[in-house]
Length: 313
Image (cartoon, rainbow, N blue to C red; front, side):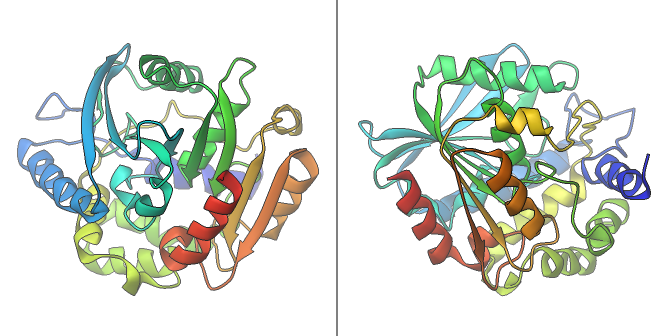
């Protein structure tokens, strides 16, 4: 194993919550105490109000636990699934949701093995289980020929779903998808996120935001609080999730129209990611967003929103 791959493996073991306690105080996959969980859920509810549009929250039973889905937008709009970034939950879409929900029926899904309102009741999911879990949700809502927007890890999951021979996905937007085309571009610069998992503090959290965002001042304090608590309390063990870049053959198998956006100051992806997307995804469009980091949907909201809508509509 190369040094880079080793560093990436260590990074993701801890960033994805590999330091979980084996003896949790409550029957919860993510949180260790009821106080932690209630504090986080309260911050989630406050952050969700930032959407500032009508929405409904639903919990549906699946083979692996309860899936929490936020639904918004016109019933006759084209179905659009939103897959959030790591530890970000579906509330992260607050800068984009008004634009995306104008002509689309939104289904924002909290990932089962992270902070959010979905609740895992089985063993940690493998890659194959992840595909089954999302397909159960799609089947429940009878989603056919739907679009997907995935950010960071959500982009990796969207790509995983698109590599399956049997899928009902139409267009795909990937916002700096993590571990999708290549390993983390600047592993050293992401060490702040690793240290945050080891020793959570407001100061380390601030440094992490500065690493992943060119304009952390644009992040709502309400959402920032929720995101901090997710990083502070989350103890989910995602070792079953083998989040490694897709092979050339897997990427070539994807025939969907795909838009790939990355920030010019991104620490997860670089122009190399876009070059690989152009080479291997036959129906792809790519764009670099200037003055944006990994959190490009916040750093340059209008530019990203316009690019997504132009592509989707």
